[in-house]
Image 1 (cartoon, rainbow, N blue to C red):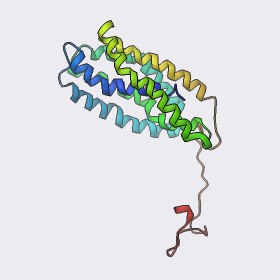
Image 2 (tube, rainbow, N blue to C red; image 1 turned 90 degrees about the vertical axis):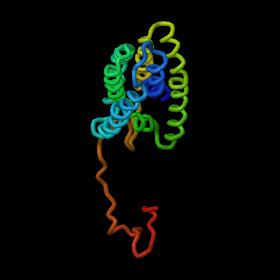
Image 3 (cartoon, one colour; image 1 turned 135 degrees about the vertical axis):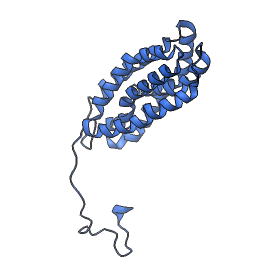
Length: 215
């Protein structure tokens, strides 16, 4: 579980936190209106699409969307950063937005995928440890590494960080998808149609009485 969120850590922080500084202060010439570009790309290229891909994963499964997003990010990440490095506002907006959309296929299902990789009795502990340790390394050091790459190997060099952390995530997903659990688990898209009949249930809230089911 420490490997699975690494693309999310690197991808999100590089794309929408570090990228604004990169476009404004590191690139020469800088991208005009860099912070507005970043805001628009974050809103329409990632936050809204992530809601949709997360919802979509309930129907088609987490793994399919996350694999698609991870592989596409690994391939297109360097290309989109290369476009941004030209310093053109329109080009940067389109490239950053497209990169966010591709990344959203991975980030949307991520926070359901990781907990479902563990049995219920250790689920939250495993999620919190695995996710935060992975994010600590991938997100915590990514801005520094990206800046060093840009300064020493060219403005487009940070794009290859997407490919590196995508490979780490693919390894983590390969290991995680070997485990499934009866309470849902990874990619169990079956729906439990068992419903509680509140009218016949004796412990239903009625006439001021509080049901344990509703607490």
